[in-house]
Length: 100
Image 1 (cartoon, rainbow, N blue to C red):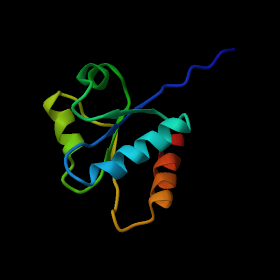
Image 2 (cartoon, rainbow, N blue to C red):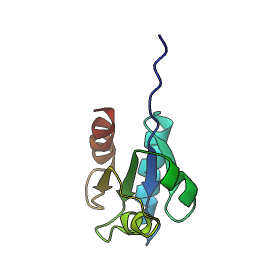
Image 3 (cartoon, one colour):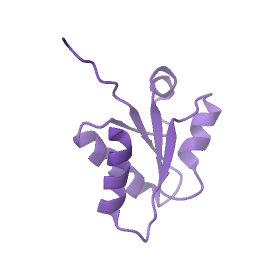
Image 4 (cartoon, rainbow, N blue to C red):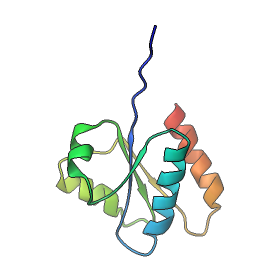
């Protein structure tokens, strides 16, 4: 039996200087095979045609989630990174949530 696993879209915000950590988190999760990294504002067709879509935000302004709303897409979940927090630990928390 062949099992097909859904490859979620990991949409990183692009709203401010904090977006770099969101993009890095999305790329790290992509490297681990947990999703496909994409930047908000770049590929609306992918965001509309694929599910689940998760946003990874660099701050509480939620630019990625707002961009998705403008495209008519509701993310399955949004993850907001804490700029003062441990980056590696935050990526691990997101990875654990994606595995469930």
